[in-house]
Length: 422
Image (tube, rainbow, N blue to C red; front, side, top):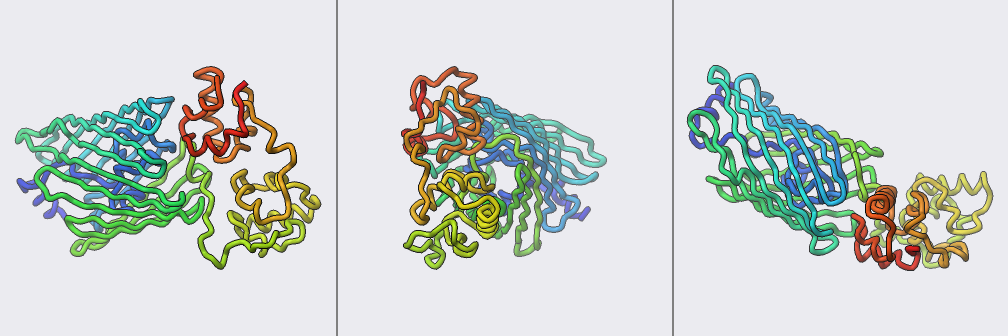
């Protein structure tokens, strides 16, 4: 391994501070992360993300590239978002006592429009080589990200556009330009594509996909060219903790591993609001109306969004507390949201309480629980509505709710008849 590092150091074609992948989610998706705008990653792939991503995290990642322990990399980052402003800071280190690269990253981003943001990143580089000393440099990054359509995100990132150099030999630090696009299908399947053009190298194509099986598990796969490699990964979610793991293959070097653990500081959407989509024709609910008060747990599982555990909870609650009078009564069971009730309403014999359709929630006085009762509004979005109200004052009209992050035209059309601003 020492010989390999020595060759890298002495090679004139080796650019210092190449891309260091310590985010297991991105590794599992082939590195196609420039346009993944749903959460701020451990690698801070795009300096525009802090103001745009609905999920802000503090996390740490580690990677061992192809069994080369002397090239082990580790990172840590945290993000903060307030209104239209986003901030993030992180640290990445790679190497051993013989050769080590350290990078301190900061990013400041601004979202002038609801569906678009841009950011500036500053990277402080420190290169330390045994018996050769150390050197420092400063790099500047630019990033932009936007969603022209609700499920489509596009992004571009320019790394080290100021062309920094380091050391007495003025070695050029790696520079590259990323173009990315991602598309979310049915709130469960994400496709990501990225084209990376690095100064002095052939362009690289990256492709990845992520399948969100449920709110606790995600499965990933990806591909990247130059050189050709495949990657696979999974993500596990438990409340505010997320654990991601990925493995990357190489035809000559073998396998590389990456592990990331994150704590969610703030979120307005996924994964809590993700509802499983029943796509198997065999699993679709029966056409006839299902009697909630007599159905077995197996029959309840046939309803959209109702799994085995939830079905057992429904049956247990019914047996202990008595029959359900209205569909709303199922909302007291953990795991059943307002959206789930609306999805199963056509297939059961119960109806919503008569006063429910006529009741309007006052955006200027509603508390957290009242706001969470609205379709498409989870705990994070409800908190954002209250925060927006305290910062900007009372809502003048119901349409003003679209100024809150996470609520677009599509969501507003679903709740417009249920809300008022008085």
